[in-house]
Amino acid sequence: MTTLLQRDRPAAPELQDIRIHAFDKAPLGAEVLGLDLARPLADSDFRRIHQAHLKHHVLVFREQRITPAQQVAFSRRFGPLQIHVLHQFQLPGHPEVLVVSNVIDENGKPIGLGDAGVYWHSDLSYKDRPSLGSMLHAQELPAEGGDTLFANMHLAWETLPEALRRAVEGLRAEHSYLCKYEELRQRSPWRPKLSEAQIAEVKPVIQPVVRTHPETGRKALFVSEHFTTRIVGLPEAESRELLAQLFAHSVRPEHLYRHVWQPQDMVFWDNRSLMHLATGFPPEMRRRLNRTTIEGDAPF
Ligand code: OGA
Ligand code: MN
Image (cartoon, rainbow, N blue to C red):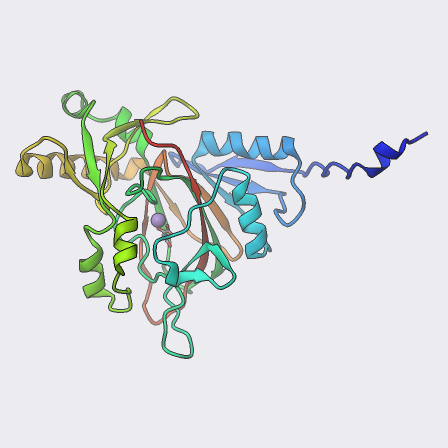
């Protein structure tokens, strides 16, 4: 006999037939098949995805026909979401979704950030609490190009020559959203001029050069050509030279996975373990993706 209490409790979501395959011959990344993020996700399925994300750093969920609200809800299971400083490019009605796109609307206005990721970076490393991870859901893809590269920053740290490891361990570096902003604006005039309020939102921050992943304990290099401006306490030329060596080592081919987008892909990467780069595509073609960004810990 079922009691009233049992009948009122909502049924637990059904388990899904999830298959996770690491990418062949790549130093990171896995494909997730058999999962439909439009369906309710059981806690045990969520835990499998969470563990796989920590292990592979990039998860590619294929064939996701999900709404922006569903992307937001799934992202929120990993932590609070961050709202990008370029609020001009929020998806209407969804402040937590940043539109990454080169598309211009009928009034001649850009609908999104058209040059996201033209330099290697980790999302929001210029914030006190940078991003844990980001999710990009493909909406419209160009017929050629538009791939995204990911670099494994744990490997970058672990394979760094001993002398360099000793030179950088314990150092700290400044990260700034503004450092490349004007240069990018010269190249892409649709980039908005930042308001005083926006500038105040992105004050430079100091981060460790080598960080420890808060969930796995593994160390990773945490400097990038987009946002890292200088190493604290070093003369400028020395800082520039050291950063150039770290950047070059980080993106050696054996550290990289190239994501070639398929329609309806949703890609979820770990910003604490990786850097990423947009490789570009013919400018006359259209590309549009929806991004959610999950807040992480203060790096240590
Ligand atoms: C981003 C980003 C790269 C790309 O959305 O954070 O860097 O290939 N995108 O669109
Ligand atoms: Mn990015």
